[in-house]
Length: 141
Image (cartoon, rainbow, N blue to C red; front, side, top):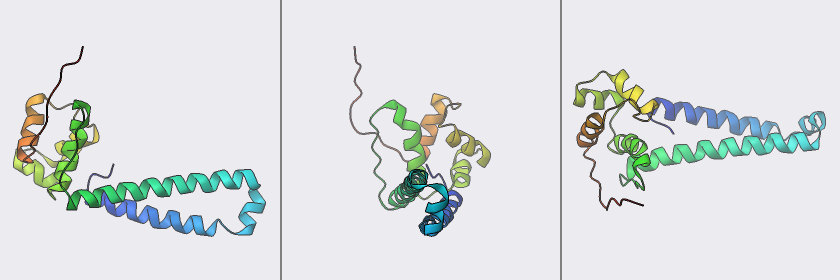
C-alpha cells in the first residue's frame, strides 16, 4: 500500500521502468536466449508486478478524490486510518503535528499497521482524521 507522496512518486517511477523493461524484453533475442517457457514466465511475472503497481497508484489517487472507506472488520481499521489520512490529504508530518507527536511515530504506526498503538491512540488518530464509523458491531458465537 502506498502511504505517502514520496512512495507514490517512487511507485510511478518503478512503473515506468518496469513498462520499459517489459517492452524491451519483447525482442526476439531475449526469448531465444531464455527459452520459451522461461520467457513466458518472466513476462507473466513482469505483467503481474506492473498490474499491482497500477492498482496501488490508482487506489492512492482514488483516495485523494473519494474519501469513503469501507471497513468490514476491526482488522481493517489500521489500513482504514492510513487511507483516511490520505483521503484528508494530510501528510504523516501534518497528522503528527495534530496529535503532538513526532512524524517518525506516525510513520512507525503506519508501517506496522498500528500494532504498537494503544486503543486510546487509535481513537485519537481517528478523531484527528474526522473518522466516523457507520454500521453495526455484531458479536458472533
